[in-house]
Length: 600
Image 1 (cartoon, helix red, strand yellow):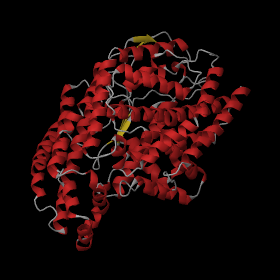
Image 2 (cartoon, rainbow, N blue to C red; image 1 turned 180 degrees about the vertical axis):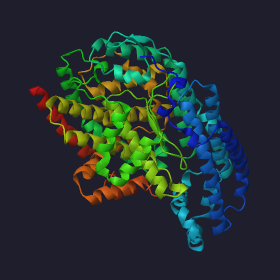
Image 3 (spheres, rainbow, N blue to C red; image 1 turned 90 degrees about the vertical axis):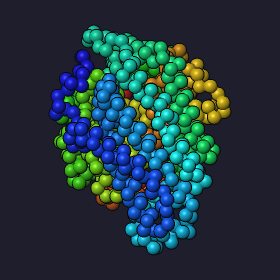
Image 4 (cartoon, helix red, strand yellow; image 1 turned 90 degrees about the horizontal axis):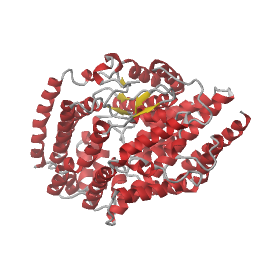
């Protein structure tokens, strides 16, 4: 049960970053070259918009530097993430971040220059230089932000401060992934295991309640001893967000965060309203859990993740999980599966949990690299769902990079979470369409209900907390540990209802959530899961046209605003219908699960 050090992980079970840079010396050479190119970029400001041809040429030159920089950045970041105790890799990562901040400062003149040109002159440029059409959406996004862009010198100053303003987030990352250690506890077999964020997700699902409680207490005791430090890092991050919003003349940090992708604030607030409207469904599920576990009056937060039907033999080696994922995703067609096969068979996935590895999972990479995936494999059903989720991100990246120019070769998180959770819903549909054994079916239904709870309800709870802390700081409140714990405790009680007993350390949960450092990120998990419910049903039970529309969505990158891209895919996210549909599915599966569990 000992977690291996990075050096002990077999090479074939790690991702191959030599396809990004063959050696660190190659990275170093690229870093030095791009650093010189970044230094030369400010000279492009003079005469930047003197003609359509000049504007096209200089934008093309700038994006070429950005493209080379992105490889440097992701290599350093991914190399550090697999061993956050490696000081050399941490230094590379820090240098990559600093160079990215230098680049942002060097090109800060772009927005003011385009705005000074004006819409009328820009429209004339499009007619004068046909090649400039490639940058139309990019340039029109700038024009749309006119009232929030500062004069060139001020934008340079704000961009140059980016490295300093991210210090709190960097401190949180190092503290949680490298310095913070948890004690050993006993697992279900009585074996001593060192608690980590990675194996906590397994231990908190244990059928042995004492193991669940010990894991919960040990985890939050670890965070609790640094509660004031975590409050300080979170407060610093919130202040950075509020500073940026105020500097750029936004009403608040929420409006600033959503404006980049033209997401109406109403989409965020609509999510909170809809979830509050349907909290009764979550309370029903929590009450059912209390009844099944026979914990009347004593249901605790450490009881919220244990499978309440018992665990069937749904465990997977990594090879078995890849085969299962491939089969479930075949509904998307041969071309999609080809992309999955490349990802699964070419060392694009780093799946072994090792000491000092970044916790959780993500899909990464750059325009000119493979779409890499970081996992911390535990061999259970949740690991399979995580694999399918991150595969959704990576294949989305592959399709985007194959079909869009570099300027649109990425995509906003708003649509990213839809691509990943559509895959999760496809896997759920795949299982529920085939599984007839009552016990296994009950387990799968509960897995879905628990996932919905964790993705729609819990992430919306996080989104509400995030909105609260930004508004509190804006109003002059001090974000102390006591203040944060007090609100979080009340919010948690509101969401989970009266069945949850008061008094546990769940009020410290805010201290361990890295997404609170991502600037209004988490709501997109909830909106994405709801939209993915509709898309997955269309893919599984709809027409070939529905599948083609979905693949076209994956190919769109950032070539249009996310709301528009989703409307083309068949989901209008400016209305609450897609949320209501998601809650309807949750209610139907909750009803089926309730009936089924009574017969077991």
